[in-house]
Image (cartoon, rainbow, N blue to C red; front, top):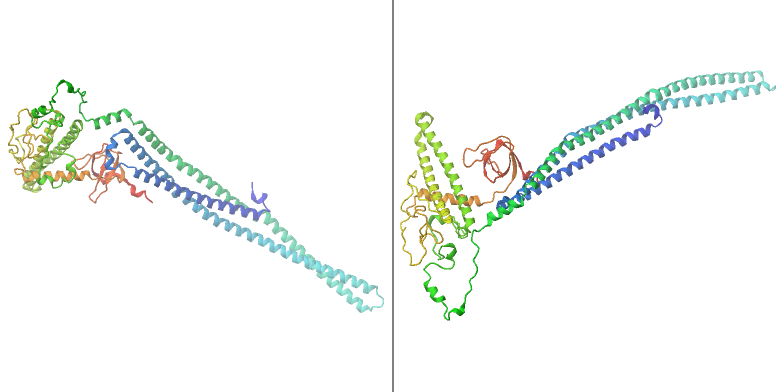
Length: 571
């Protein structure tokens, strides 16, 4: 179909139609703009929601259950799904909307040019028709004047009263008007021929060309709109596999929930380990007229009260140990005792084992550091140009003191655990690295108890130091005999424990770009593409603090990960 032949007389309607097409493009542009705004807003609200429901440090105990971990995995997938909505909006803005803006500008410029060409062509035809009408009127006027002159001549020629001269005058007038009429007739015929030629060209060549240009422009607009619709569909289709992956991840997170495992975790966490109470015996008051409670009370051995029949420990309130150990204790030490004796047996064993594992990890780290310094010292000794080996002596000595302190603490908590499990205590080792630990910490190992008092099977009670738990031999040095290095180590340990109690908030997520193997205790290993939580940003030293899914924390190189922080989602 050709607009030039089919719509030759609908120029104004075609002009309005092309304007409506451009208006539709502008409406579609506004639609895409609002759509992108909605996608961004939706993604930001989802990410903000995920951030608000990220696990807090104080609630980390809950996240050992499968239902809590399932929820955490689900909101991580929701965060990734929100990111795909951002991808849709960003790709739509960068490709479709940008090209659509250019297209609208081109359509407006082309339409203006083509309509201007059509107006010029129509103006030319209009001028030609006006000249034709003017020549026709002149011809009509001349023809009437010629007819009037002819009629006047005939009347003069028929009138016998007129002279020959007057008749000749009317005859000349008739001839003049006839010549003028013939000239106007020829001019009119020429103009008519010229106008018809121009009109044929107008409707067969000139205007069809303008119509063809407008038709091509409109068809190009429609084809481009078709491409934009397909492009928007492709943008949506490209993120569908990732969205489906997120949905599969949510389903996997739901499938990972195990009620039986959670029930077992509840038992392991809250099991006290106390035996069930026996049946209450019948107290027959009629068998004896005198109650035996007083005699029984006097026969009760010293230190064996009702509360001691279960725990085997005295309940006498005694002064806590003072000195440097209480500098940073605060009120929390009144609630949680060092040997966790205030906890039920089962929970106490778990807490002690966790403490022992921490000491073993620290000892392993310090041992590896010591071996590294010894190797470095050996290299310096062989090649003094690399460095002075004497500068490492102080560090090696400090490392040895740390190891002594850690080993002493390890033995102390191992003895606590042995006491909780009813096993033989672990004696202190005499092959100390720095020999800084005093061996005169426990002097009163043989204490004479009152008759009938149950004797401690695995440890000796020291009433001057502790009130509720036995003191293992050579595990806690006397305060006066404690070297300054050990005191400093214990202060640092207490400060470290208090620091660890501070809540590290999750401020974002990261993905490992490369594999990284930790080389010291402050860093943590990671696998390629591993997802982790960011809890402390890079402070300018090239290291970022992260938390893995197994709750282990440490530093990793910032250049090895891709981070996304939640505060970037807030609009």
